[in-house]
Length: 167
Image (tube, rainbow, N blue to C red; front, top):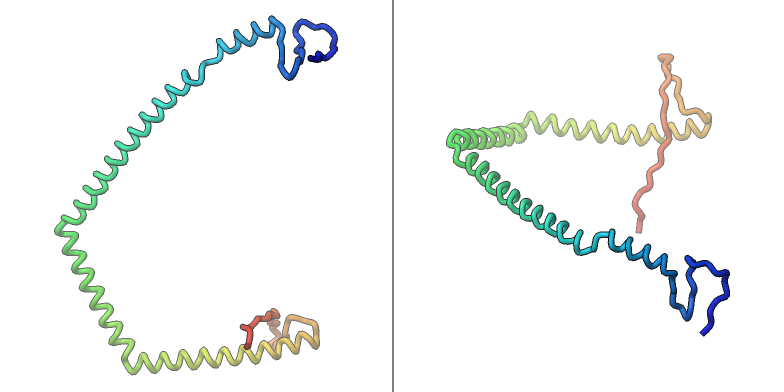
C-alpha cells in the first residue's frame, strides 16, 4: 500500500489504493448537505401524481370534444332546410355542367377554340425565330436592347434551355 506524500491539511483528500478518504469535517458537511437535499422519491411522487391528473383531464377533455363534434355534425345533418338547399345546389351544379357541355360542343366555340390553338402555335414559332435572331444580334453587337423604328427601345434577355437527352 502506497500513500501519496502531500502537505498535511485536515480538509484535503488522501488517496490510498484508489479510495478517497475525506477528513471528518468534510464528512459532516456532506451528511448535512444530503439531509437538506430532498430524496428523489420525495420529488418523483408528486410529479407522477401531477402527470396522472393531467393525463386524466386530457382524456376527459378529448371525450368531451368528441361528443361536441358529433353533436355539431348531427345538428348539421338533421337540418331539413340545409338539406333542401344542398339538394338545390346539386341540381344547379348539374344544370351548369350540362349547359357548359352544350356550349363547349357548339360549332361557334369549336371555331374559336381552333383559332386559339392556331394563334398559340404561330406565337410559339415566331418567338423561336425571334430568339434566334436576337441571339445573333447580341453576338454581333454585345447589346441587349433593340432600337425600334418608332424610336422606342426594347430590352431582351438571353436564355438557354436544356432539352431531354436523345437516345
